[in-house]
Amino acid sequence: MGFGALAMLSGACGQGALAHRFAGMWGRVILRVWGVEVRIDGVAAPGPAVYAANHGSALDIPIVFGYLPVDFRVIHKRSLRYLPIFGQYLSLGGHIAVDRGNPFRARRSLSRAAVRIRGGTSVLVFPEGTRNRRGDGAVQPFKRGPFVLAVEAGVPVVPVSLAGVKRIAPDGLVRMRPGRVVLTLHAAMSTEGLTLDEAGAFGDRVQAVVAAGCRADAA
Image (cartoon, rainbow, N blue to C red; front, side):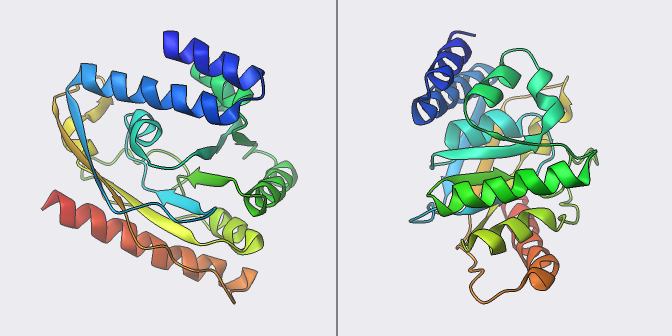
């Protein structure tokens, strides 16, 4: 609660990086209390990038905020801004809301996000579109939009595998159990030379890398 208030205050003062640091502290404290250990494999990209992760549980949120080793802003559905504390942090911390019910507004939000990325801001996306509620933890197909964004911004995509989340939280946060999650940052995949028409196929290749990472770490 305290870190959330500090994150909101920092965001309101225009200190997005500081707000992100407080959010990271919140994520690590929450996971420690729940008995969740996070192992990080791989390194962040040297410059701005789109980080594309699988999304199987609400537990993914403290994991990425606490342990993804880069200052990022998350692209999220607009309705999350109505959540207590976390929603206000998203709004004040410079994160990017997308109105999925309005294609024109969603496209405009992504265009603004591309401008911010070209200016040096990395973003995190969950390209499955919503949490995967399947018990097997399989990574679902990725939507095209985040990869259109990466192509427009001219930045690489870093596939991110979150493996082991379903073992710890098989039914979301209702039945938590202690355990270990592996966060793998795979090699950055360049968008250089790609056209917007190729964004969907590029997203399929990113999805294959993320899914393979989840299977390998779960084995």
